[in-house]
Length: 488
Image (cartoon, rainbow, N blue to C red; front, top):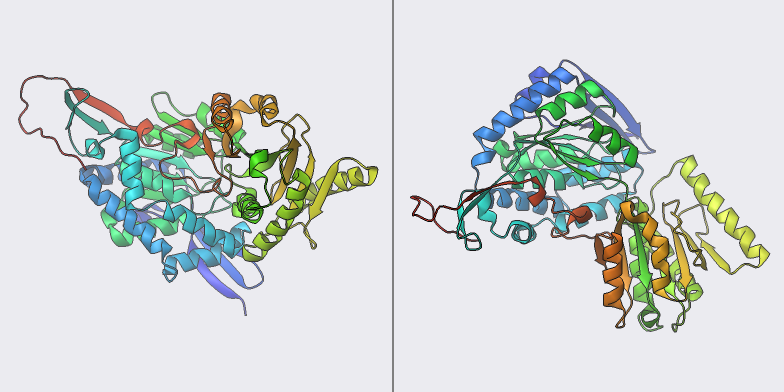
């Protein structure tokens, strides 16, 4: 029998639903579950009223909450989502796969990865990394560097557009908003409208006052009246999405609004010959398989390909064969989700091209899943250009005679470079990492860690919290009554 689940693709502050004139219901289903997703009909007038309401609630409550209290709430929310018996977690694991096509296992791994990096100590460390003393967010604090007093002020309202490629990611935007004591209005993507509303229901359970400063809605992208109403009320905007969508939005955001854009990005890996040894090979290919399988390779952090240096104990071709075994094991543990006919066609086109190259005797190797398009590994000599993967667990393995020779192929990608896994294992590694940084790579990690950034990551090369703040410095040398030094 089909299980029917009633779900909300929105979250509104307590008492605000009276402003909603109508609701719509979208139905999604697979073989066992039907999700009836309810969402309000949205207009520019409604968004204007909602944004004003959020700012007033923020002024009444969130703006006056100690940062320690805010972090306690966020920590508790993460811990609840890490509890496998938590009802909202189970609801997400049932409904998100139906809507997105991700497998339950991928969604569960995504939630765990996001929440495990969002606990109390991680948040304190992120704040200290970006602003030194988190108590600057509460009041004026003594700054020994200034020999005066400083305070950080966040926006009153942040408008954020979420993407659909990483289940669980939207919580990060609400966390960042709360940490800078800003109200937040989030627009969910059509492809993943479930997690953000559920996360705010968790915040409501823990701290209703904080939840009243947050909202989630959905409207079709490009609804100019609605988007202009949101931006006209905002002090800051955080955008996730493709190049065209982000460019279109930024053109319509009024001057004076801080804009952080997280657009389309590319990732890759590099393994030097000293790391290509028989000892440890099983762990290394498992790490690369994880990089490629997490989020079904849809995340900007995911690798399109790995460059492998020739001359090690294990050749790039042998590595590709071993990787295929790891990919098969990963698919059993964390199955790939369903994909569209167009996505399947892109993978089959890639496979067909390299099947022909193999028959022709070219120096290539194609290893694929025995049934369907679950995973694909393609080895070839470095083509000298960076070729994007069709994704959905299709990974290039490029053989190179010298890792430094890949740099010219990476250089033209400067606007899109984000994440690189590097394992060289000799004295060249420091110089190679320096060169990647110069080329525009904003995060360098180890194989198996590409999809697990910490809260301390300078997201796309910026400080995601500090970039939202405005500072006030007091350089008076005489005594100021009531000002004192506190540190956490």
